[in-house]
Amino acid sequence: MRILVLGSGAREHAIIAALLAEGGHEITAAPGNAGIKRDVEAVRVDIKSPKLVAELAVEGGYDLVVIGPEAPLVAGVADALREVGVPAFGPTKAAARIEGSKSFAKDVMARAGVPTGIDQTATSMDEVRAALDATKPPYVLKADGLAAGKGVIVTDDRAAAEAHAEAFLPDGPLLIEEYLDGPEVSLFVLTDGEAVMPLAPAQDYKRLGDGDAGPNTGGMGAYSPLPWLAQRFGSEQAFVDEVVETVAMPTIRAMADAGTPFSGLLYCGLIVTASGVKVIEFNARFGDPETQVVLPRIESGFADALLAAANGTLGSAAPLTWRDSAAVTVVLASEGYPAEPVTGRVITGVDEAAKVEGVHVLHAATGEGEQGLTATGGRVLNVVGTGATLAEARERAYAALGRISLEGGQARTDIAAGA
Ligand code: AMP
Ligand code: GLY
Image (cartoon, rainbow, N blue to C red; front, side, top):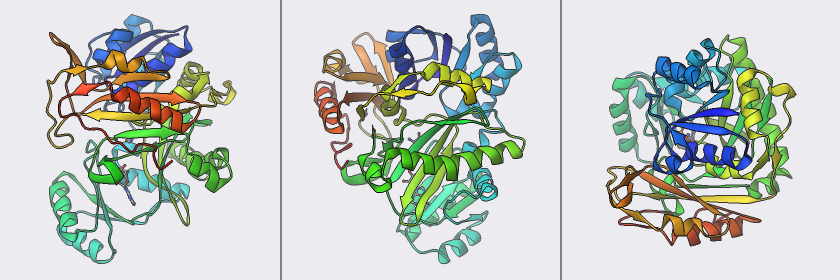
């Protein structure tokens, strides 16, 4: 298959790595990053421009375009691709609102009967205060629109909750949501708008520091599978079946009923509470960094499944086959991340790290300079360890990370340790 992958992060590098591992595909990235460019051809294009992406896709004669990040989806890139007859993996602009607007997502969940936290909408500080008065801490406040992961606060501190509201109210309404207590799980579900194909669950580490201390980040590591989940539900499959039945299918049906069928990847962000599995968010795309640990576990059928989701033929597609393996990814971030990452520093040891058995290194924000590889952003590299068990995958990931040097670099030391 000739495949164009849009995006420039470690998630897109992971998608490309999975397609390369499958073999038999000709892959182009747009715009990619320094690591992706070591693996495949990359072209420059403004991926948020529906017109330019559609032109590129037609000229390149691609069989499939995989849209990585949310911004092009929200801009209508999938719509433009469908208009010119190029299969696009990713929802339309209208359907991507399930990620772009928290209140839209809440409406869909209410119609679909999907379990989620009770919430109130506030459009003024008076309403915010009234809603906080009616809630007990920890307080959960969410900006309605896309806020690059910064729109959500979970805090016991009433003043911090109000300050967050002050900061985000000018951009639109806020949701004040019931706090859901329990471990988080991300489940990715491929869909063509009718049929679904769930992937393996993964867990993300959102906080910067060990033991979940420090600020929220884009994600500092992840692992899959989740043995504790299998224990709790009898098997991982039992959990996946429950989420498909109570969350994914009702949501997909409600989206279709509303005239905004959702195809692509429905990312179910879940909390396993004492009173059942509940949704904290939907995303309209692969999660980062969970993708980096889910995809290496797929043995075959990935590209065909993506194409079937894009083409509306997922119901008759061959099922994916999975390896009986585990994967752990540890993120290496720049000094100062997430507030003010220091960029431009030299990175060494990446090739040495990749020589560790079962390890590959994905690039998130790197550049190729005169001194070699440099860090160009907050999250810089994802070291992925795979192995027969989580313990082996974790040991390999950390052994490889130990070979990489980045002045001031930050990484958690406890990814998958508790699992
Ligand atoms: P989001 O941007 O929606 O992924 O939220 C960021 C993080 O806030 C999530 O990964 C959770 O750790 C936390 N969070 C969001 N909503 C809730 C909730 N209702 N209860 C507890 N934690 C939450
Ligand atoms: N892993 C969180 C996200 O992709 O939004």
